[in-house]
Image (cartoon, rainbow, N blue to C red; front, top):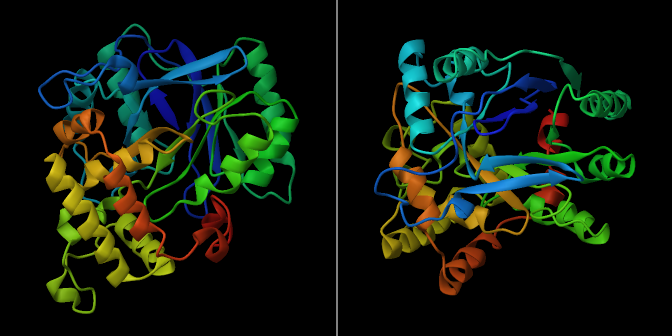
Length: 357
């Protein structure tokens, strides 16, 4: 689910985890913060660059384009101290990074967010209104659930409806049934460019532009759990003891994506290209990877995992807003990205990697 400080009441939408159901949760959210940066890095970026609005008909939801992903609070990345984690969430919000992504399968993430909201606006505790789950497309119940959510929205009980990992075929069915969806959260990175294929084509055929009209896409996996970073540059996975360990669920997951795409040698070519661009602009490899995806025509925001209370990358995240990739940068990145396999043909459409598991 993506929760943003800066709205009044809206639908929190929870992503599909591996072999798990998607979860939508409407919730009341306080209005104490706006997505405006403080600090040195990224200070040149305008408020309009930091924020975007996802729309459907008369509905709208303002989000920060850099989303704090809370999967890493689930336990696979180390022990989470709850007090330190909430303190860290406040620091992210104070820096203008006010949109958080979470799910019931992310360990204590939703509890942490509740405590966080209480500390921000103690008189407005979050109120859980409803919970709907859906996964198997052979069962059209997901459409019934969305219609019920639409009824709740029309009754004023929730404000917006969002999706995660719905493929293009089902997205078209949802749109044709008049469901006022504001966003569809899918996996997207320099390695995984599937959202730019069928899903973008659907929007063009229906007269819908992902970025400005009916709905926008929120992206996760943009830095591939940390694989798209200097840490894995010039490493050889044939010698595991000499390479950084793949010791988190996300690293293991996205390493499989690299293997499906083109293997570790081609991935090294990609990292070297990203590093050259990063050095040119005096930023990090993850900053370039995220900026590249944010600049794609279908992208409203990109999710970056936060290890609350353990480490933080606020300044690095803020630097993304000021980064501008030029034609040469994009050309070099495109050249390497296109050398890999077409994951739409290898895996299937967005989210199919989970449905086939």
